[in-house]
Image (cartoon, rainbow, N blue to C red; front, side, top):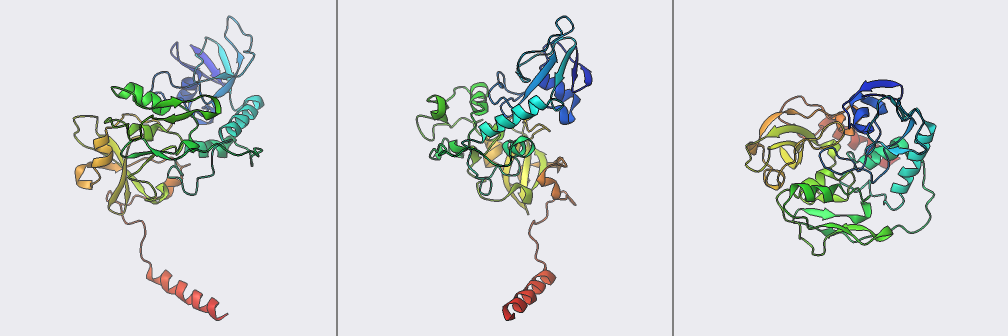
Length: 330
């Protein structure tokens, strides 16, 4: 089927959603997505950030759709014409959606481990307002441990349901889910530490914000001070293809490999994620490809063996000492 998105025509297979059609084009015409995850069935339709305008329904029925539609849930039709960044209506609606997502979200960026690779940060920067109009108290939840290595900050959650789909589709039984309704809805378990299946760590990878965090990595370092390399190992539970995050010679954390849209290509087991944090456990393939827009792109990879991030510069230390003594005298 032939569909046109922001004036760019493309041919896609029947049943393709508008979002995936835009991803085949790439670039700025791709709508943002906070809840959709191509590797998880039935995901999407929750956050509404991927809304687009269908200015022409199809060749048979060229009438425009009366309302903006979720591109992750709407399949293309022959001759369909879609507007994303070329529609002021879409841009204004997306700004309002971002404002709604941030209504209860705390300003935890200075202390949040997700900072630097947070989809909500990127979304707020690209489509958010300069300041909030919300003047009421934000909802608050206590931090809880839902597993031995996972801590839940429900206050940061945007209810994208990704972690619920991971538990449904990767594990034998799901322990956690959505409790309560309306403004009191929360991701939780009835019993703390209940999540103990061997693929539970993937909930951390799919979370677009800092609601689910790795307890073994918490407050260890900022991601832009680390160096990420791709590696693999023979694992009898998963594919064993991961990204290692180094500081100096230490592996601070292990994650699944993510594509350009922040989606894990192959889910990994907890053994690879939490128990294998030595270089000798892995076969190093090379540096991870980092987008130019990422704050992690500032790191350079001179060798395959990551060098210490913090280096002692004696000349700089001496200059700082002289400057400090001079200002003290003044």
